[in-house]
Length: 150
Image (tube, rainbow, N blue to C red; front, side, top):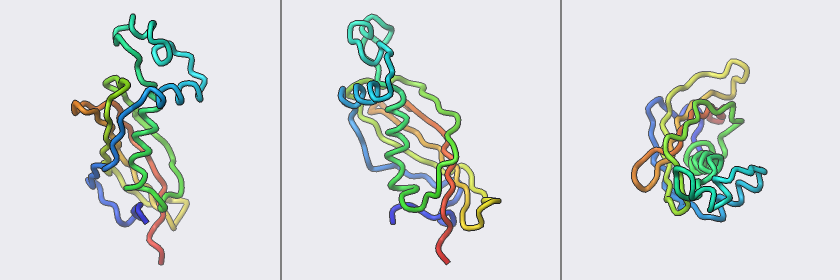
């Protein structure tokens, strides 16, 4: 199993995720249309060209979902009970078609679950970084994790 159980985590654990992804026009078009987002910055090359960005801006929900997705194999695959929430989501730099993104995760908090003795709560800080080393998305993810089997 790829994911770690609650007891296998320590505050300060860091993971540089191996999966990297170059963002394509299809990625941006699919997430934007699937979510019924009519923002011209994501869909209209002429309008986006007249913006301060000068070109199409990748939909932030794609960047956020990719950031969490690339972390799953190294963190919660097979050991997650449920994601409890996402906090402090920020996107300090834009993402453009053709950018190559990579992810990093750090454990920032651990606590026992009061309602589920067979689980504990891990808070991950996820970061998505572009090919220039700039953070393009960051968040805290709180996850209810299974404990090691008895």
